Image (cartoon, rainbow, N blue to C red; front, side):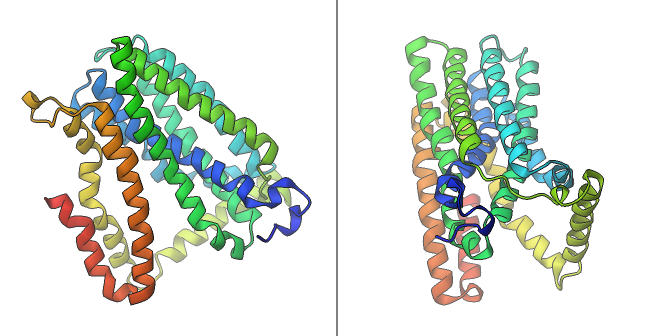
Length: 326
């Protein structure tokens, strides 16, 4: 493992100290606002359409985050933003847990506001964490740890959508209350994030910022100029419209099913659902589903490397989308 030249004497010279934990934190918050919130709303009595709507809206900041990424160049370094977001998220999730206690279908406004803020903070954490990664590691090390990065991000869904959704069902049985069960789940997530935030105060590298080598205003301008140049050059690529359409429609069917699938699984038979428990949903949609996704990604990469992308693209597209149609 090659340490960063600027930090060879530091513990964070070794990416294994901070890459796994950083991307676990990213995946955990994303799944909290996108998947866990969706199931929680359903258990608390919210209509399916509203549950899907709000949990989709919470991840809008993850789509829009490039537009405020240049603002992070105003900081002394990117580590400051990572730690700030993580500690703020801990407080926000604790408040959300306390709000769940009195939540009911007609009184979820505080819950919606807090989770909406968590989406914004989580997206900002993503920007800063990726910034630490690319400015601390050289290109060789970035490529070396990209698989570990992805695997640890996917540990977030395993924990939140798998293990904790399962425990939400178990805690509901023991306490007789979905509100109490989901309060426990949120407090566990807050505890994990709190541990990671404290851990990162010790071992997360600073990451460089354009503002560290220029005045704050110049650093912001340089970051904005870089964004504008990258954005402009992106749309000058050959066949860019076809590329965008491919990316958009490749997961189009999954996008329709992503929110409604879990709700269908746990809805009652009278409403046309499967009537599964949260325990079963946690095993199917989180633990085994995420595990299968990770194995499939690995096998897909091996297949493409052996045969080539041109020959495998259509079969892989069919593997992705035919099950959605079914």
